[in-house]
Image (cartoon, rainbow, N blue to C red; front, side, top):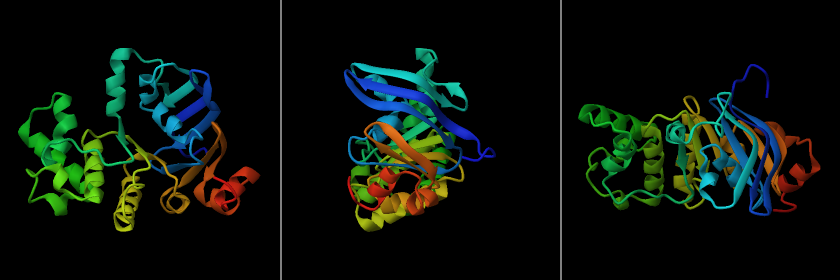
Length: 256
């Protein structure tokens, strides 16, 4: 990463154990602000575990031990008070592999995070819901049926609704764990276009199994293997001229 880029997220010698299993090994990396970084690697390589370091979701698993430094805007997010963790998660939106809308209306799905955070102003909520749905490229498809159940939407629309829900609380970082793997090709391309548009305002970290997707949407790519970050660089370099033989083997389909 060149020095003119600001690192939004950073790890220094990050280690993570699930009981005796060494899931992340000495990971040191800087994730540039307002860009898309893709994490690739075979199943079980640690990429989703790494992603979840940043919203402290690994904390919820029993027997987890984490060491090293995990930073956002230069501050170690594992040294904050327990009472500040919710505030941290408000700055970091998360989108999962399968769309997981709540059993509520389209409107209430997007408004949920605002209400939970104590916002009751009707006009403010309406404005934020519209803004988030526009950012998630869903507004024109749902503006006339905001009171309908989220389950009436297609899978691709539900995933964009979940992205809108994450965006409504105005995070600065968006974590996406294989956001298109359960979707059809047309819905997938809409999500990819959306990711490309969102990077102007957000720092996006995306885990994907789909190498073509990583090469299409990301500015930077990190390749994980057995808990180690083997290589991190600009996506173009990783996919055309990687430094490490293991990276080349994975990208050319020799394993994984």
